[in-house]
Amino acid sequence: MKKVFLAIAMVACSATSFAQHEVGSINIQPKVGFNATTYDKLENYFDKETKAGFAAGVEAEYFMTNKFALSAGVFYSQKGVKVKGKNEYNDVKMTCEVDYIDVPILANFYVWRGLALKVGLQPAFKVRDKTKMDSPKAAYDRTTFDHAYKSFDLCLPIGISYDFGNLSVELRSSPGLLKAVDHKDYTNVVGQLMVGYKFSVK
Image (cartoon, rainbow, N blue to C red; front, side, top):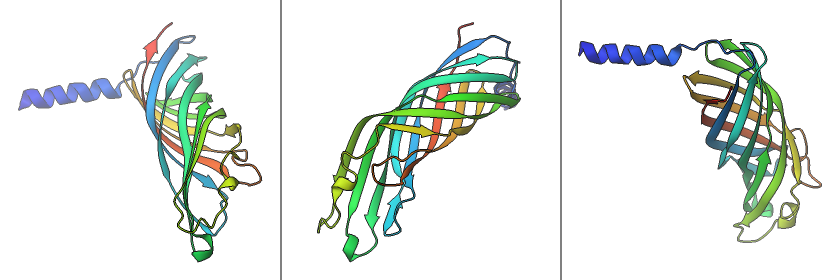
């Protein structure tokens, strides 16, 4: 039993310890994760639900000091929203699937060991969209969404991550700054949980 506790303690110590980053060092980090997305500013006759999706890609990070780094990445990210009407005049159930190539550019502040706070800008380019309707009365015009999604988006990613050695876990929120749909004020709201692994290249 003592050996088990000793092994657990050694693993915990190695996970929580984190060497200072070297100035000028670069790491590459493949990442995969889960998206929870919706639209902000929907009309009040809609009930909105969170839509699940996935995100995957790679990010490069460059340390300008031992506690501050800049990063840039490229990710395939599934976004969109699920909506349903609140009354008989808006009897609509609809899933909006919109996939993007996200390009997050972040400032990373390492505040304690492997704990980092992140903020930046994220251009996004639409690569796929699909609107699925499930409305008995077809009371809502699907063209409000179908083929009306904007081809470009810009988000403000804000995140927190922790490094367990080379393994990184990150939680990020990315509210949209631009309209996601033509003729509407809807904006993307994205919550993201990602896991990555860092490879040092310099």
